[in-house]
Image (cartoon, rainbow, N blue to C red; front, side, top):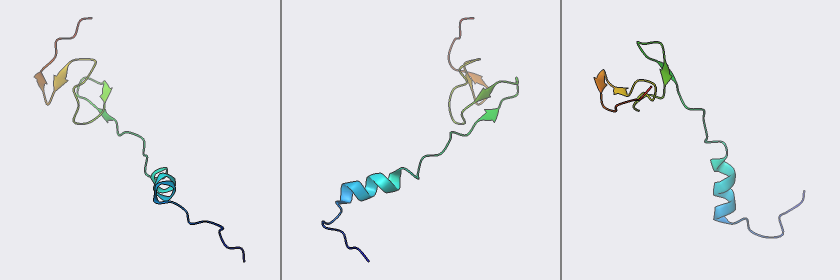
Length: 58
């Protein structure tokens, strides 16, 4: 069985392992029917946890 000619660096190993870490962001459906990422301000309405925190111009 073949052997590697050189030692694989820590950076190369970590980069390879990190590629399997990424996941799609979770999306939740809000009470008004829009979708947003949890623990973030809803970009459609400007609300967070039922409170208006950002004024949104339509």
